[in-house]
Length: 129
Image (cartoon, helix red, strand yellow):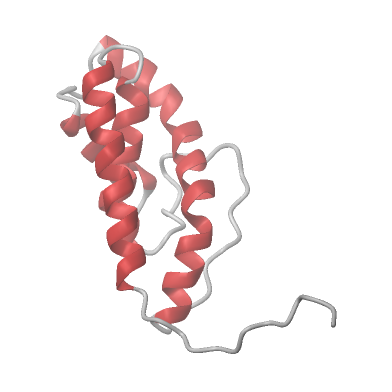
């Protein structure tokens, strides 16, 4: 899946139609927003991939992610990513919609986090005796 799929879903969430004048401005911002959301979710993506035996993801620290590039997070993150991108695209125009979409992003990440099974481990002794 490409980042463009996430972007097109985000446009639908905010009621934008592709090929409009405002869509051109949004498509200019989308690669930066896509990179930001991948940076924010990369730690959770690594934990998700490890928990479910998936191939290791990339350590994403880029500032720009072209819309035609492969979406670097696990496919499970795509719906959440669309909420984030939509929220950031609409922030300046409709703050109430932004809040709703950003809350959905947070809820989606919380749901993904809840899917990761508990891993039993020992407690590190960090206090000197």
